[in-house]
Image 1 (cartoon, protein in one colour):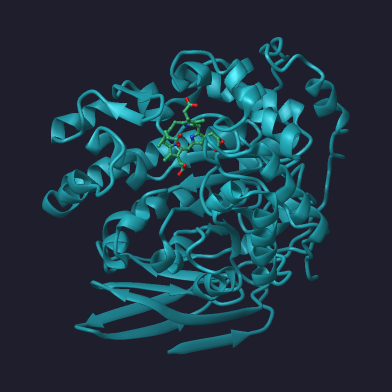
Image 2: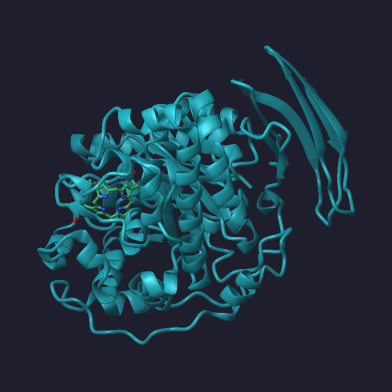
Length: 484
Ligand code: CP3
C-alpha cells in the first residue's frame, strides 16, 4: 500500500491519516497533506508494521513518519524529520583550535585538572533553546562538523566515528584518576568528569565526546535510592513494585538536582573543539533497573508489571519520560550538540510489546526535544526486529548493533534516517589486523552513504586494548568515503 506525492510545497504541511484495523486487515486512508515552509520533496508512505492493533507508518526519502499508537487508537501523530531536509548549514563560529585539547593533554593525566571557568550558554545554544525555528534545525556551532552532517545525512568530507562507552572502562588513564568511590561519586565531581570525558578524545581522536555520566543519575538525584556497584551495575535498595513507589520519582529539576552534570557539560563545551553528545536512558531501560533492582537477563519482573499492571507501567514510564526530557533539555541548553537516547535493553521485547508498552513513552521524549534542532540518536541492542519502530519514535539516527548488516538496516529504517554502528565490539579482542578488516567490512556495507556515523554495535568493554580502537579510528578516517 503506498501513497506518493512529489513536488515543492510552500505552505504548512498537515497530514491526516485515518487508520482502521479490522482483525488483520488494515486500511490506511491518507486524507490530506500538508503545510509549512518545508520543502517536501517526496513522501512515500509504507505500512511497515502492523502489530497487535498498532500501525506504524514511516515515510520514505523525505523522512516523514506517521505513527499511530495502539493505546490511543484515535491518536495519530506526524513526526517529520525536517532535520533530514537540507537546510542552510552555516558555521557561525569557527571551531576551536585543537591546541586547547593538546595543551590539556599536557596536563598530568593522573591528576584531576584544576577547576575551569564556568561558561554560560552560547548565543547559538540560546537560540536553540528559544526554539526559534521549529521546522528546521538552527545553525549551531558544529553544523559543518562531519559528525553533525552525518547525523543529518548531509555531505561531508570524512566518515565520523565515536565509540559508545568510550569514556572510562578500558583506559589506563581512566583507572588512574577514577578513584575508589562509586561512579556516582565520580560523576558528582565536574572536574573529574570533564577530564574523563576528554581522555578518549585525546587517545582516539574520535569525532564526538560523550558526557561521562550514567543513565541512572537522574533517578538517583531525585532520591529513588540506588547505587552503581563496581563490576555489577545499577542496584536498587527497594525495587519499584507498587503504586506507592511512584512518589519516589518526583520530577527532576536539573539545575537543583544535578548541578554537577550541567557544570561538566559547560566545562566540556568550553574545552572541546568538537561536538558533545548528551544522553539519557529511555523509559523502558531505566524502568528495568528500577523494577528488577539490578541488571537482569530476562526482565521477568519488568515484563510481568507491564503485562499484569499496565496502568502502573504507563504511569512509571510517563514519569521516567518526563525525567529524561528535563535532563536532555538541560544538557542541550548548556551546549550539548547532539543527544542519544539509550534504550539498551528494548531488544528483549517483541515488536507488538514494544509498540504497546514502550513506543509512546520514547516518542514523548523525542517529541519534546525535537524543537531544539539537535540530532537525536536512538539506540538499543538486539533491536533488529524493532528498527523501523526505533526509527519512528523520532530518531534522526538509529543505532544498529552488529547483528544486522548496515545495508539491511538501512532498508528497515528508510533512507531518510541516518545509521550509527555497527562493528561487533568483540573483534577488538582479535587484534588490530582482524578488527581493522572488520571495520572495512562495515564501511563497505555502508557504501559511502552520507548518513553513517561509525561506532561499535555496543560499548567498549573494560578488557579491550585501547590501541586497537585507535587503529580502527585511523582506518575509518583514512579509508572511509562519503558520497555527495
Ligand atoms: O559511554 C560513555 O563512555 C559515557 C559514559 C556512560 C556511562 N554509562 C558510564 C559508566 C554512559 C553513556 C552510560 C550509559 C549507560 N549506563 C547505559 C547505556 C549504554 C549501554 O551500555 O548500553 C547503561 C545500560 C548503563 C547502566 C550501567 N552503568 C551498567 C550496566 C553499568 C555496569 C556495567 C558496565 O557497563 O560497565 C554501569 C556502570 C558504568 N557506567 C561504568 C561507566 C564508565 C563502569 C563502572 C565504573 O567505571 O565505575
